[in-house]
Amino acid sequence: MKVIVLGAGIVGTASAWFLQRAGHEVTVLERQPGVAQETSFANGGQISVSHAEPWANPSAPLKLLKWLGREDAPLLFRLRAEWQQWRWGLEFLRQCTPGHTAHNIRQIVAIAEYSRQTLQALRAETGIAYDCETRGILHFYTDEREFAQSLPAAQLMRDLGCPRETVSADEVVRLEPALAAVRHKIVGGDFTATDESGDVYKFTTGLAEKSREAGVQFRFNHLVTRLLSEGTGAAARITGVEVIDDHGRHQVLRADSVVLAMGSFSAQLLRPLDMNLMLYPGKGYSATYRVTDPALAPRVSLTDDGHKLVLSRLGDRLRVAGTCEINGYSRELNPVRCEAITRRTRELFPGACDYDQPQYWAGLRPLTPSNVPYIGRTRYANLFVNTGHGTLGWTMGCGSGRAIAEIVSGRRPDVDFAFTGLPDPTHAGRPNGVPAPAARP
Ligand SMILES: Cc1cc2nc3c(=O)[nH]c(=O)nc-3n(C[C@H](O)[C@H](O)[C@H](O)COP(=O)(O)OP(=O)(O)OC[C@H]3O[C@@H](n4cnc5c(N)ncnc54)[C@H](O)[C@@H]3O)c2cc1C
Image 1 (tube, rainbow, N blue to C red):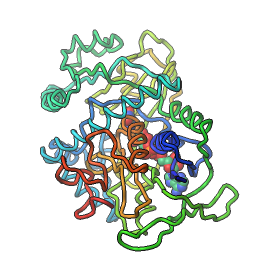
Image 2 (tube, protein in one colour; image 1 turned 180 degrees about the vertical axis):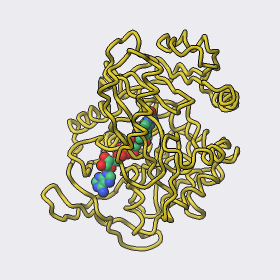
Image 3 (cartoon, rainbow, N blue to C red; image 1 turned 45 degrees about the vertical axis):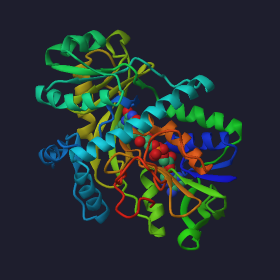
């Protein structure tokens, strides 16, 4: 079967790899000149299965109110005269109940665990080098109340089989000695030894290269402008993908099936087909520093709860990422946010890096209100979605690619996850925040 994959981030590239492995003839269309140039370019690097709590949780509404209008707030909602944003925001609030949160955590952990196993198998099979560290993730707290509030989530993770261990402040520093300078501020932490970190850009480019060698065609500088369709009801199908190609010409490309993996831009492509994915961009920042004294820089991947930052050692670099601004599609850098990241990193690890030459970057997380991605079928028989991976696209990307290849091939993936548009005997409700009755968008 001929399959076109739209988008070459981690999700589209992993989809292409597994579709090719399943015996399909795969073409990837990407508007950039290479793979992983947008959100999969410089993220926080964490494969954080055991820290999979979504932002939509019972404590979020109050925090959001407190942070409204604060330039350096970790999660900032800038209200716009835009229906899509308001609809998304209202659904986000609805997902903050304890019941929804617990349900969403279960979904995310299931696909994230499946994905980590998939990543590990891919790493062993392909030998792709991506500055991978398998020393776990250490989440440390500087606020007693936040630490106390984290305990039920840690328990839920343990109940779901994730080895998330609550540790004392001394234990935090024993696990990551580079935190010694701020020992007096730390009140406790939790440690998940099975979590990992690595450079998503290096991995995705490596996987694309292996995919190309295996026969996948990548067409870069191709802007997807429209999906052409015919038929209604059960007979509805996609008949072609309209693109502006690398010579500026409009073309229509045809395939038996199409997989949509355009990250934050996926919803815009579906809207003319009357499909309204609950998807909105969440702008996040990262800063990458050159490590100048390896002994002072962390090796264990970290989450600084107080400042909502994640830190990953990528070889001779330190990547620090965080903050989220719900404010449209702009990727411009806000200097206040950039400086706040450098200030905090310098405070945590004085002398570890060259803080005078940071490499700042901003990307758009494709956020669903629940942080549960859309992976599965649509009401167009040959159109599939693999998008909305939000804060955890690196964590869930490889497994999502493997799962969509199974679904396109007519099989149910071997993971207990509420796939979009697939009958699910074990899960009631609408995990993706898709308004009823459109469990299949
Ligand atoms: C600051 C920050 C930190 C993060 N940290 C982590 C982390 O530590 N761990 C984790 O698991 N996740 C993290 N994430 C989330 C993760 O990076 C994303 O979820 C993931 O990269 C999304 O991958 P994707 O393939 O869906 O989207 P993308 O990487 O954005 O890929 C979509 C592709 O589609 C292409 N495209 C879009 N529109 C068109 C069009 N019209 N025509 C052709 N091509 C098009 C784009 O060019 C792009 O290449 C972080 C994100 C940010 C912003």
